[in-house]
Image 1 (cartoon, rainbow, N blue to C red):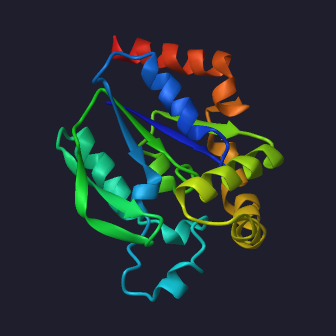
Image 2 (cartoon, rainbow, N blue to C red; image 1 turned 60 degrees about the vertical axis):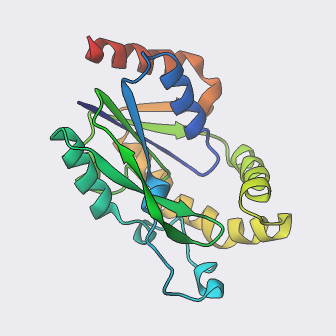
Length: 202
């Protein structure tokens, strides 16, 4: 099993890179695990407190469970990926079953942060993108998908997203085997990655 970690800042284009890689590979060969599914359940906190949590900090993610799931997949066992809601900041009682595949992609802003998770990866990728482009994407996404207004997004960006990017996310670039500038628009890098994966599938 080839495990690929794809990290990068919020709004850098990680999801687009993953989609384009999958489009170029045989159907059913790739499983995708989202780091966001492993945000810690905060149902024990009042809603006001949940909304104050810094979701760009490594402490907000249950990496131990994610690593446990990767190890199980490598051993040929299916796992139950949690389902996380950004609207309620809690985990659903339901889960999503993931079957072992020839290729597993782990995607998320902090997936290159813990050494214990990096050790499970065959390839480590960092998707790079200018901060102004990332901010415009975050504004669009958070308004449409997460029920926030522009001022809420800008406040959160200034208080947690930007400082956490500088402190926790940007430094993980040093662990990447491949850096993809311009995210999903960089078809050369995406094709190189896809070709490497196809060689492993053979």
